[in-house]
Image (cartoon, rainbow, N blue to C red; front, side, top):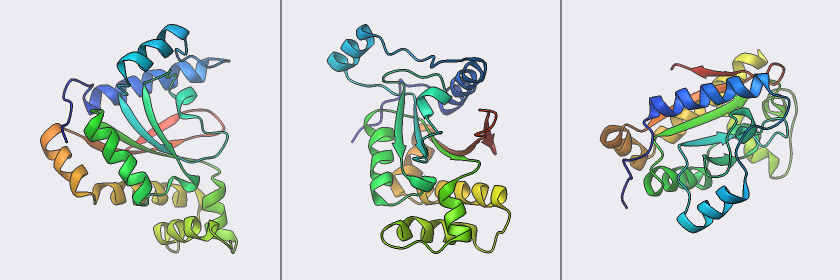
Amino acid sequence: MTHANDNLSANEAIARLRAGNERYIAASCAQGDISSELRKATFEQGQAPYAIVLACSDSRVIPEAIFSAGIGELFVIRVAGNVVDNHQLGSIEYAEDHLGCNLVVVLGHTACGAVDAAMHHEPYGTVKFITDEIADAIGDERDEAAACLANVAHSVRRIEESRQVRRDEQEHGLRVVGALYHTDSGLVEFLDV
């Protein structure tokens, strides 16, 4: 496997995400390029996303819109509660190694139903796999906002446990950061950046 070094640095990617989020907050409709020319170009030349975003499946959390991104700009992985298992981790490793992404963003959000379910309900069936992971992440936390942040931090740590990710952090400047999307205002708050 080779890591492409011609992509944006992690810091450049964060700056681009912040600028896109500012445009999103001011916009009334999506801002990303979804043109037929771009669809054709990415079909013929492949994708070259500048960031990986692990986000919740919540219908209010649309990473491409939140960051004013178009086709081919973000490698988005969505799962309820933005939790990490081997499937998400494999997707992240693929995107950072084969596509040259130097930034992984774990994007949690306010008013997360999965966090609420882990805190206040007794889920059953396969949903319990998600809520159990979140419950482990938040421990005894009773404040929902703090629990969302703890869940993001837990997913960041899970990603950084990957040998591949650790190697690419050292060799290629890969960064894994947490972020919180405020569903009321649209603002993305990057954590520890």
